[in-house]
Length: 512
Image (cartoon, rainbow, N blue to C red; front, side, top):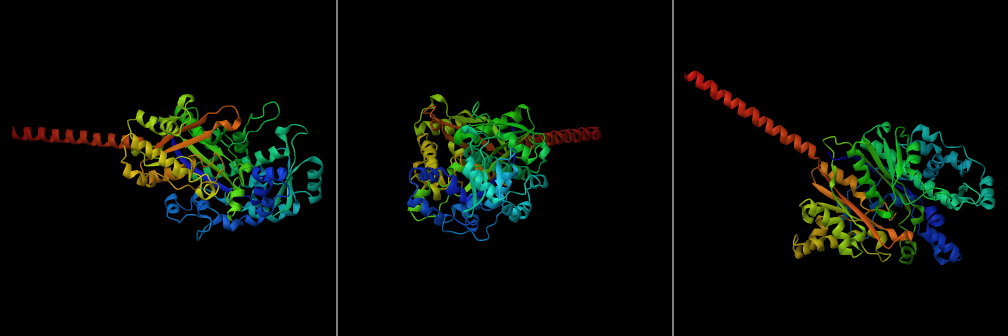
């Protein structure tokens, strides 16, 4: 029997200071053009926490709005405020930067994070009130140090500064004197990814209604890689995050595949559970500081706020078939193989059409497709267009070519089978997985029968190959429940036939 999706979480962390000081577009500009007019303009284009919370795509990401609701909002979204927007959502929360820095310090096992004692004292109580932050995590927070000590570490030890509201409040020290893989910059990047993954794990366990001790394996699929000079990407983010989240019975490992990694990881999780290796596996990923403000220049040039101001995170709980939750169908997997080639039509063919052909299904038999779910509010001003819509047009065009869809129905296909993008451009975060939580719910509610999750990646980013990458899988309603129902009906029929035969037999005896 196929594994099921028991629950999912989606979290955001509003980090405007990290946009300016840690996003690669801005840090590169500081090196190349330190007196840049763009850098001077960035602070004026950063959103407040309240503005980030009331932003429609962010509210959709954490589950306070359904993608169908977002589709009804007039584009663009950045100037539309969602009334009644809240920090906490069905799937997770939008954590403010000051509280997140405390979570980062709690995730630091080697005392490389230093926070100003005044800052810690001011925000620790608010952090402790977060419903998923347990006492054992709060206890990991140090009381802090004098600001002068932080200033010395930055000036003399190359520590990476930490800011809040443009004021210095801490730093991340290098973890080694000469190893670039343990530099303060890399440690900062890795700790932010780990901390946002911890937040996602805490919500995933809560949302799935399981105990922390139920989780036996964790797979991290973010875009960072931790190690030292002898194995620069050795890992293990998964086990490190599981430790802080209190998943005492879990082990784990990292899966890497650029943007496609979450879909790879979910297939691996489903296979591990189906094989009986583990009963409950959680796929998790934290955010990527490098991508903060990635398209900032285009946003500032067009007078927009810098919309890439949040780290993203997610986690999905995959467990043994419980006869109720939607299944990941391992008999219907798409894959961009080495021989597929890079032509868009070939890519979509390998990921969408091929697995459906093997199952004897048409493209139109899939109710919803979830490919790269980037928020068009971010990508369109940067010249990248509406990424999800471009994918739906290609899928629809393939359906027309295969004779499964009338050309006149193409526009309707993108609306009926597609989704409006809402995910932050955090690389791996938008790639297929933002809809998994909604898909589970929509299937359980009977809104749809199935959904195809499509992960696509750009492997050439590592300068190792020119190949693209991609895998896909289908989620559908629980077949165990259907089989049980069918078996129940046939059993009733048998009982009816026996009763009828007995009645007829009794009648003949009476007649005699």
